[in-house]
Length: 254
Image 1 (cartoon, rainbow, N blue to C red):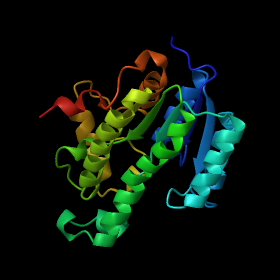
Image 2 (cartoon, helix red, strand yellow):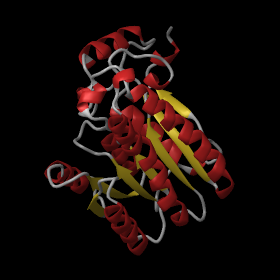
Image 3 (tube, one colour):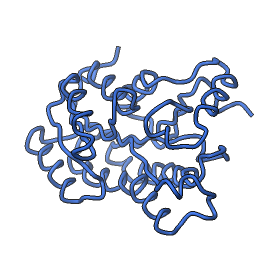
């Protein structure tokens, strides 16, 4: 099995033990990576800190991606503690509830802008901060969904947002490839996470996905974590710019 011994990873987006980010953090840790984990705010802190302790995270700090001072403090700590960063995982997305539950054409400019900033541009900002800490190469990953390329009922404005995120992955991969930094989007099928619970009728989407997938199984956070850990390894150093489907084949079914 490939090893991540001695590598360092920043994981953003853990809300609870069902989070995709938690599955990825656990897989990275199991293969030897040292972890830095963030929590959104004081409300989230009591839920995330015990998980960070369980994972043996060396750095646990707050990060609201819209707060540049918090980002500056986080990367200053990573620089002081480790002097480098090998892996960045960005697993966050947000749209105001009223915009998420309405038609795309009715989405407010403010809501659309906030969704794009938190879900897409924050990834680019984090890559920009990570790049100087990856002089020998590294891996940057985010999380997408098939609603980026086809209409998924009730996914609404997050479809265009995820499409933009995947385009950002491709351009960042092209720009950072010469420096040995790979950029990826992990795209699991429907998963029952806290973030997904904000999408209307999501339980029906889960049932439909499981019945239509060739394996008849939904992906798990462990499935996503295993793929994340592989992409973080040197064995995957020549893989970049892709949207990686981890969905039991759901994405190939018409």
